[in-house]
Length: 145
Image (cartoon, rainbow, N blue to C red; front, top):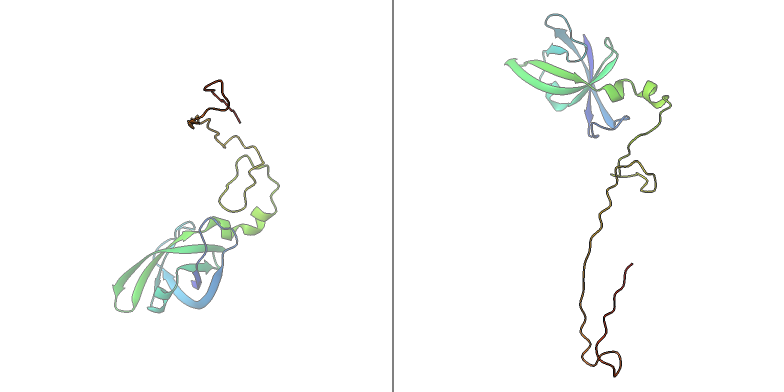
């Protein structure tokens, strides 16, 4: 089974990942292959340099989740499917209505998605005027705003 390895430095929640191309390696699947989490054995230590992969036979992108050294130079690699990157073409063509939004980077605070919690906070400040406002004595000034 051919596997194209990459180095990925993007957040897992990003659809179009920023990946740096690495190398192609031939690996051997031990038994049947789980499409969601394949396990492949490689006869090279160069796979340790990468954290992301594409398996053309399965037509999916994967995170490298585990590496086990079976003996010197022989490694068993466990992958986990990256659904967002694997199906990014289909996802980008979807027409959707967003129910919630994230304010992390480019959210819009003027879109009411009922997740903004407003809190009424009462605070009181007392200022003393030693001579009062005029000759009649003391006054209480209350403002709300």
